[in-house]
Image (cartoon, rainbow, N blue to C red):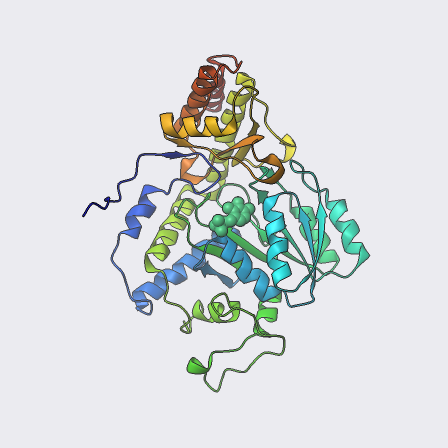
Length: 410
Ligand SMILES: *Cc1c(COP(=O)(O)O)cnc(C)c1O
């Protein structure tokens, strides 16, 4: 037999997800399995919920983990909170905005899409103007639109939604743990994030939090399975959630002190999330956001010094993703291949109108390190020079180093 041992080549994951997992997270994953109703395990789940509330900056009781990737988290929350026929407004500014529309259309929601050019975000007034036209049940939008590297400011949007009586549902998959996300202060009713981006655990789980308003909708759609129902379990009045696995009504019971059986919890993944959230809080949110900002500043300074154009409205660029316009004289595929093959560094292309036009560089979680930024700039410079692209040699890494030196007060 000649099957390979799992022994992957060393890589520097400088793409917008997945990124490198913190080594402490990988070690936690190798701990032995506990049964899912072992009090030792359920108390770890409770700690995870407590830590997750701190990371989401919320007091929401309903704050827990869904066993699916972030996309499944989006589907779980949208399928649970939105009933057939509900009017939902989606301000889309990239690929993931369209994903929200795609999921909601399958829920038979009445979706209205407003769009803005890729590389820009919405002014709050544009959203308010639409909310004045009819009575919306909810606004669903992306915080950090990874496909374009744009970040939609949300504080005003939250106030506007509240004023117009619309729920605000937000995808913070790419930003949570790397940039400020304030669920309560920004009036976000439901928030969805992932594990493989700035949280720095492997992919495979979604992190969610929602308030009482959403919980009430969920409870009025609740139906407990015949095999486990008791006399206490009364069916809700609204249409049942059309998914069993992603049924928030059952999931929130599973994550409640009742721990009502639903699926078998993914023990090792729970260890990973527990450890990843602990690492985030040990560093502190404030320090973590500053680290991402500094590395972003160094990366952008390096790119500019090389003469590379950064894509989009720089005022609203995510600090955790940078899209660069592919310089003339090199194919984006060649650039990515040589970065991976010669340097072991993974960067990403984009989608739709930006496919082949930009390369996206991630600066997320454990991958957001000074040495990674400097290596990435150095590798990019070497590959561009090798392909006879005109850039100013040597300036990129030097400019980034200068940013680090100034930050240290040198
Ligand atoms: C990565 C990403 C997703 C999808 O996440 P999966 O974990 O691949 O399902 C959704 N939304 C945004 C904004 C993302 O960046």
